[in-house]
Image (tube, rainbow, N blue to C red):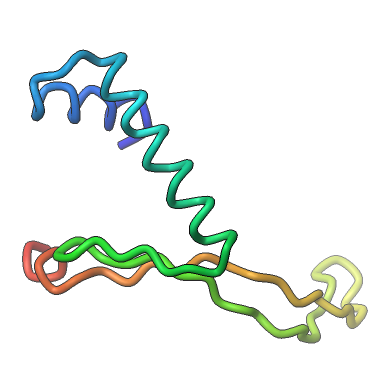
Length: 89
């Protein structure tokens, strides 16, 4: 499912217009992004939680040359499914 299909599903499921559902989805994405940037955790009970994790610097190999390279440390977003979502799968 892509963003447009999700907007359509939200509009159909909630009885609001597609324009309003797109604005609501965009607001959710912006709020989640801002919270994660601030180092907060976003938890949706029954659905799951989003959090930021630090990935340490590590060694890797260039697949073309075989030369050893250093992969820089970075922050990554993690999602952990909630109990209700896991049980529905």
